[in-house]
Length: 219
Length: 218
Image 1 (tube, chains in turn blue, yellow):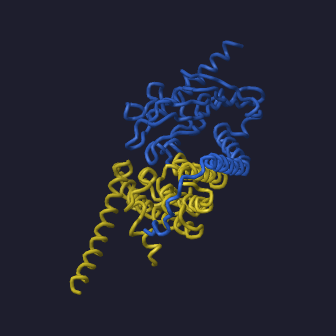
Image 2 (image 1 turned 60 degrees about the vertical axis):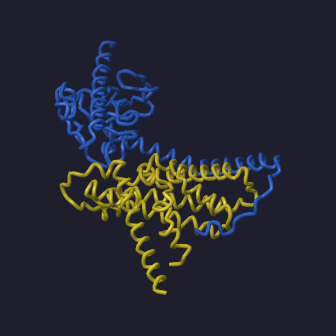
Image 3 (image 1 turned 90 degrees about the vertical axis):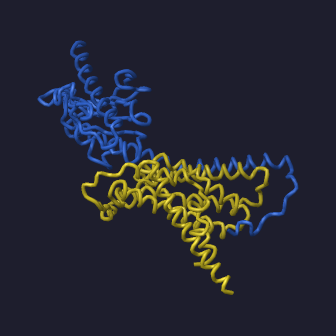
């Protein structure tokens, strides 16, 4: 290539006082660039995040079926053992006439193929279909592109098998992937990710049941 | 095609000959669309960094040129990441962790050091564009090979890059194809790259052979 076309003459060593000054100026300049682009994009990114969050909450807890403010009534919970939390997470409670009708439970599967898989599991409370899953949202994951990421709804309909399932249907000991003699389909060539997600959803349902038991015993 | 463009696209292709930037080349080429998205992002980064490196030549001293380039490249990539997050959010979600990894693409450092630090801004921008294009094309071809063999589809998830009408070019080439896992996993990337390098070398040898025959006839 013509890279050598215009090679510089070999300079004598530069003034040693000049070098740190140039580096500092450059650092200032690049910091300014980053501040500017952060300033230009921060609001937009925050808006997108909020919109995504509201959209996924709407799928978890249908807005028209509740009458409270989800964001205002949310609870902070920390369940490192039951739900795999690494910090406080938000539990969303949907209410109708002051009675609890929906929950969106944050759960983290720590046993995925690479890193944590963060989920929100929507569950109905009370009524004939109490305990049934409304939907499962994948909040964040780092699974292998093309394999483990098939848990994402945009990439495959794998996650669609969970709505309206509950701890009774299928029976509790069937909450596994087919490879482990359970009910749920796995993803070809990627068993670890589905196994982790199924078990995390089961944990969320168990938490939901215990939460209601605690509430009854408290009142 | 003139000499300047041909060396960059073909004869001295960054991926096939110089073997630069193998990390993104191998990691994100599992589908044609991922490869295309990453290729485009790489072109943008190498053009912008070449421009900036060329513009700061007056204050670039040889003792501190590497930290200066690193600073510039890192800030350009971070800016691009924020812009994509804000304006191409879907694509940002797909390419995910690979955007920050553009920083580690030695292709960008190589062009800054070997070309842009010694040439005027316009020619540096051209250099960045064609070197980046050469890289992106190889990446795209590897993406096509791996996707067709691995999943039996072509341009799946194109809507993430092109919006709604992207659905029209999403093709399933072999219905009920079981998939060929090796092509999707990292080894598939090495095999695909090796095949392309072999084809390129074969072509080079042919050209060389035809040249020598002409010479010997003289």
